[in-house]
Length: 243
View 1 (spheres, rainbow, N blue to C red):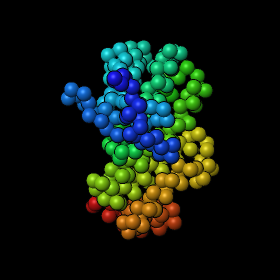
View 2 (cartoon, rainbow, N blue to C red; view 1 turned 45 degrees about the vertical axis):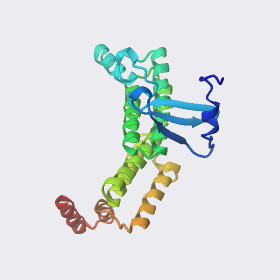
View 3 (cartoon, rainbow, N blue to C red; view 1 turned 180 degrees about the vertical axis):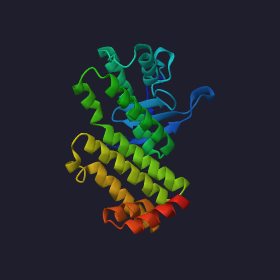
View 4 (spheres, rainbow, N blue to C red; view 1 turned 90 degrees about the vertical axis):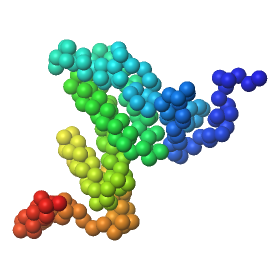
């Protein structure tokens, strides 16, 4: 008799693809909530869909960030994360990354945004209480990537729920947030050539082409201001106020 702990049959019926993320929702046992699975090279990662992906409740809290926020209230603004806490933070970063890319692969855009927001909030916490600048930089270097995922998800969510124009607006908002990061770190000269920026612009232009969308009012306003067409800018502001 085959050992029920052996998952060879599952792996054989769900091939690994090194070129893409393969994920799926699977019914939970005994009527429990569905679980999210991601196929990896030699196995499967199974994640809870709510709270922490591993289902663990740190000190009784839904996530480690929730626990740390309580610690922040107890200890004030001047305390720093311990080595053990840094390890736990990194564990939560990785778990939410794995779940975020899984959600994105199956087009669960609301969940992508939710998990991206959690990661961004955890990054903000790390900046406030990091033990040193080097540890902060290790995490901050991924902020544009998280914003990239969130922007993608927000755009496609708007495309499905509202209009292509709203989707393009989300992409422009995301590009603005990423530009602000580059400016904050004195890297603005690299913004135009950044791969994530290029990909977002490609998505934006493909939406314009597919749905025959011209410049949004916000884009027209920015162009009018840049070219010092102030009367035109005033007209556009009036249109925006009525929309």
